[in-house]
Image (cartoon, rainbow, N blue to C red; front, top):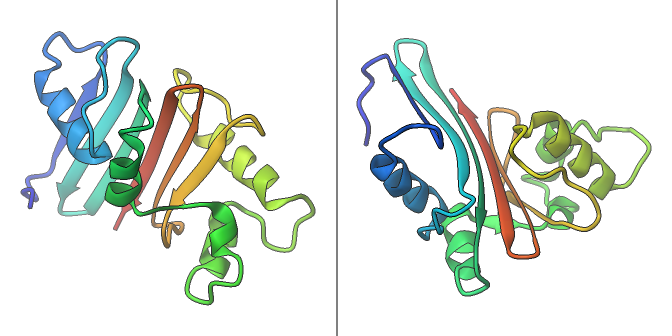
Length: 158
């Protein structure tokens, strides 16, 4: 549990001391990514106005790491939201796919590309996309991966 101290904690790959950031990233992802080509922007706030956490990571990963990532983040393929009475409406609202033309994948790519950081890869049909189970407009996490690279983006406000 972290303190509600109204301090905005920020970590980026440009910081000189990366030790604490690596620990935070390993805790978020469920594995310690190699530091080569690791890019991140982590922002944590908890205080009088509530919680406002925003994290973005781009890193290399191995397929051996993937089960830990899936478990830690409770990742699901977007198609798993379809027909799920507890999640589908909220998910469609999150990716702005309510009563709009286009495939679910196209809406996911648009959502990712409008929220990602510049150091992260753009999402397209060459990437596998996963969202944390029950992601909604107040708290969501999306991961897209291909060719040994993973992009992580999350938001939690409450």
